[in-house]
Every structure is written in structure tokens, then in C-alpha cells.
Image 1 (tube, rainbow, N blue to C red):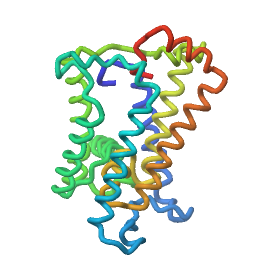
Image 2 (spheres, helix red, strand yellow):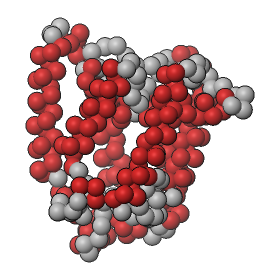
Image 3 (cartoon, rainbow, N blue to C red):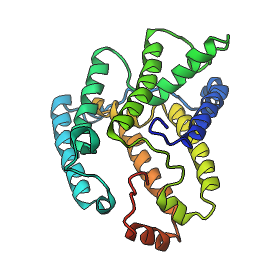
Image 4 (cartoon, rainbow, N blue to C red):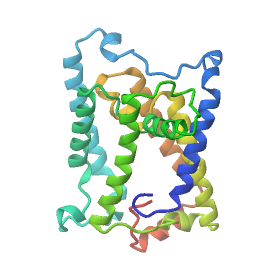
Length: 266
């Protein structure tokens, strides 16, 4: 949305609805046998090995897997990335951005903060509703920690907008080329998918105790078993959903890819 894609406003509205829906069932979660908080079970405890040795081994393994996946990625030939452009006008790639993300996670952890977008969004909503005398049950205490997370979400939006403006990528793309080719209804189906996706992603993240940032990226270095489980779920469900969405539409997708369009937003 910060990059000019105004249709994502519907996704934010879906996220707002998801926060209130989660808050409505939050107090009943224990009755249903659901515990919506991070688990303390880690691989070193389960395997009875030292953290350091296991962390180094898994770190090397993950780097090798990422390098292999990147080299085999069939979508790279459709990217419009211009490596000869200036530093601020080209995509940086997963190595540099991944390293920077790691530094941010390290800095947040060193301050005793939990880096998570879903929790930050819920904290932001709670701080805003508190101004009108309404307190979310799922964010029972408003303190420096919740204020930090709420401010982080605002900072991410501001940073994304600044990045898009400086790089010249700020533009409205309501319906991406592949979606337009696969779904004739275009704008209507896209709007419905964005709204539903916003609702499901925040409700699921709050229910599971974290999102791809908090439960996976920030939780992975702790070697949390829950983080590994959620990470595999994120990737598996994401790929499965994309496969089902475009089932029977691959011919249109290939035709669109052959036209040489910018498919970065797809």
C-alpha cells in the first residue's frame, strides 16, 4: 500500500476485522484447547545437544538450501531487476536484504523486544482504540513494549513509502498481469482476495502466536520447534494455495509470461 497499490487498503481493512475477530474469541481459546502464545520447546532441548553446534550446522544447511533454491528458481527469468542501475533504483537481492533483516532482528532482541508484524499491528490497533476508551482483551497491557511494536509498524509503512518514492517504483497496480490473465473478473476477484487474505493472515498469525516475521524469522534463531513447524506451514500452504488458484489456468499464465511483462508484483 505504501508503494502506491491502493487496492491493498482492502487488505488492511480485512486485517482490522481479523484483529477484532481474534479479540472476540481470545478469552475462549483455553476452553477450546488452543494456547495462543509462543512455545518454549527448542531443538537443543529435544535433541539434548548444545545450542551452538546445532545452530551452526542448521545455519550452513539453510544457506546451502537457499542458494540451491535461488539457482533453480524458474521465476527469475521473468524478473525485471536491472543490476546495472544505481543502488537505490534496483532490487538488492536476498543476500544483502537477508543480512540486514538479521541485523534488525539481532538489534531488537538485544533490546528485549519481540520483532513481529502481526503483534505490532494488533498493538497499534489497541493503542488507537484505547484513545476512544476501548481496550482489546488480546492486548491487555499497553506499555513501552506495545508502543515499540506499534511504532515499528508505522515506521515500516513510512520506510516502504520512502523506498518506493526514491527508487521510482511508486505506482498503482490494482490488478497484476498474471491475475488479470487468469481471472476474467479482474478487479472484483482481486479485491475480494485481498480483503479475505488480509483477514486470514492476521487472524491466523495471532491465533498461531506469530507471523512470518515474529514466529519464523525472529523465532528461527532460537531453534524453536514451533517456529520450524509454522515456517513449513507458511511455505506449504502458500505454494498449495497458489497452485489451486491457478489450477486449469496455466495456459493463460504462460501466455502472459511470454509477453515479457513486468511480473514482479505477481
